[in-house]
Length: 336
Ligand code: CP
Image (cartoon, rainbow, N blue to C red; front, side, top):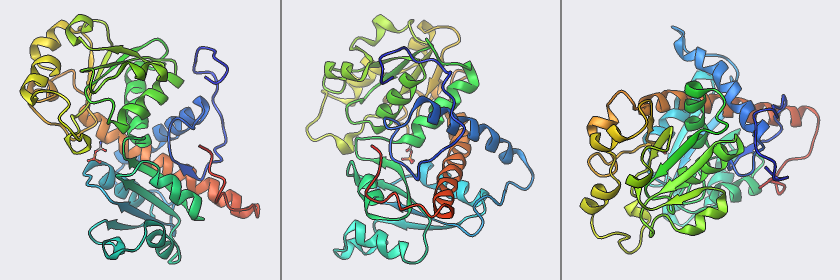
């Protein structure tokens, strides 16, 4: 919290004024709770026989994905469809950026066709922010480099609040490649704003002590603290973002940090096991744990749809409100 007081869930806000979702670092506790409460209302839509509401009818949503994705891209597509928006999918290979066009020119070209919301995934941290500053269109960060993946953080937090209610004082461990993980950063910002106690665990090369500056505990010996947490969120080793190898071998990593049945047996008896996906089965998590009774991995995926519906709904409403009130574009004034 900005004034140094301990976070509690008391700051709910009723209005949402942002036209971009770029990070959880930039959101207040109240804004996070507004998204989560809105998502709970949208969760019900997925249980209907006709899984559709007209909230974004006539709006155009573009998935602009310059990195691979299974979950986030399909989840945003379905979320937009369930809100009755038109949805267009653009990937790096299918865009004119391969011919030398800049990202901003590609986005401005699409904006000229009447796009209302861009969902952006890019290997460069800050790419969605750059687009938000250049366009008069809503922008959602769907994962930028090692910076943030705000909707993944939100869906993880949504899943935990469904299990625990208030997260104040809950002890949550993120295990693995923290330094390269945008998911870890969004989880850390979001969870600490809601009063949870977050720890990061992994080898020193992937979990440097400097992470303490984010308000988390740092551990390198998983087995020493294995019984101390209510939740373990297991992260993938991101070989694609590592230059030099950061540990001797995947086998050694699995021996020291892999979550297997033997380690699960030493955790708290009602521990929750999470993974944002994609999983490397047999490296950071074994199939028995990933598919076992403590795992909420597929619940995370289902909840992601409702969270993304809520995000699209809130951003679009804020943009419509600004347009109705004749307000200036938020271009060049993106809150960070
Ligand atoms: N968790 C996540 O971002 O998965 P994808 O890369 O499949 O979107």
